[in-house]
Image 1 (cartoon, rainbow, N blue to C red):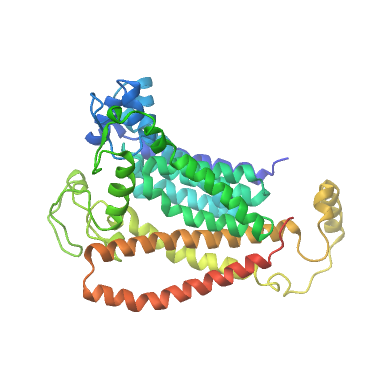
Image 2 (image 1 turned 180 degrees about the horizontal axis):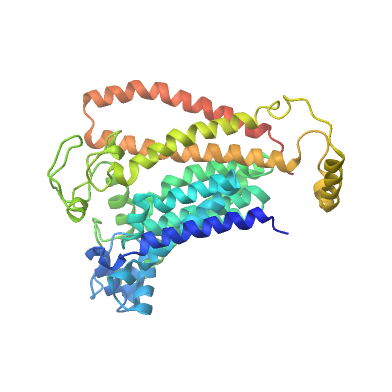
Length: 448
C-alpha cells in the first residue's frame, strides 16, 4: 500500500516536469535551427543507406562526424509529423523533459524525496539544460540517457540484481553512440558507485563490473563496428576524419584532437572575460564564441557558456550541496547521533500504535530487526556512501579533463607553475578522502 506522502511527492514532480516541458516548448518553432544537423536529417530521410550512415547530403557520399543515433530520432519525428523547425527539435525537448523525473527518482534512491525534488527543480530551470533541450543538437538525449543509466545502476545497488547493472551499462553505451567522448565523463563515477555499492564480496563485485564493461563496450562500438560490414566504396566519407573512416572521426577528430587542444571551430574573434562590450541582442550573443577555458569560465559574463546560463547555478549547488553532503555522511557515521537524549517512556497510545504497526510489518522485515541497526538502514547507508564517492569521482573527472584541456590550449608559464603547486596539495587530499570512503563502505554490512 502506498503511503499518502508518496502521492504528494510524485504530484510535485509532475508539476515540475510540466513546468520543464513548458520552458522547453514555448516558442520552440522560433529557435534558430542548426543547418549542419538539419541538412543531415533531411538527407537521412531519403534512403535507408543515408539513414544508417548519417549522410550529410542526399547523394550519401559524406556523413556527419558522429554516430547518427540521435538523428534517427529526429528523422522519425519529421517523418511522422512533417519537416519543420519544431519537429526537428521535438526529440530533444522530450529527452530534456524526461530527464527531470528520472533525476528525481535517482536522487530519491540515494538520499531523500526532498533532495530529489530539489534536484528535479534545479534541472528543470537550469538555463543550459533548457537551451540544449530547445536545440537540434545531441546534448539533451545524451543527458537523459546518462541519468537513466545512473538510475538503473542505483537500482542494481539497491536490490543486487545483475540485470539492472547490465541494463545501465547498455544505456551508457547508447549514450556513447549519441555524443561519443562527452559521455565518458560520467563513466568513472558510475563505475565507482557500482563497485562501492553493489552487495557481495570484492571478487563478486569486480566480476560483475567486468561483465558490465563487456556489455558497455559491445553497445558503445556497435554502430562503428556495423559500418565495417558495408564495402568500403559504399561508406560515406566521415566529416572531420583524415581517412574517411567513422572510427577516425570518433576517436581522433572528436577524441584525441579535442583533448589535445585542436579546436574544431574556425578561427574567429575571441572575447575576453571581464571586458565591457556593446549591448547585443540574444541572437547576437548566441554567436559570440565561447571564451578561452579557465578556472572561472563558467562565471564569465559573455558567450554561450556565460554564468547566467550555467555557472552561477552550479556555483550555488556546490556551495550548498557539498556541505550538506558531508554533513549527511557525518551524521550517518555518528553512532551517537540519535541516542544522545535519554529515551522517554512511551505512552499507552504510542504502545498501541507500535503494536498495530508491528502487526502490519511483513515477517521478513521483522526477522532482520533487533538490537542494533536494521539491515535496511545499513544498506541505505552503504548506498549513500557509494553515491557520494561515485558523484565525487564524476565531478573530479570533469575537473581533471577541463584542467588538462585548459593547460594544453592556453596555459603559460605562470599557469603551469600554479598547476604544479596545486596538484601536490589537491591530489593527496582527494586520495585520502577516497581511501577513507572505501574503508567505510568496506566495513558496511553486505548481503551475501
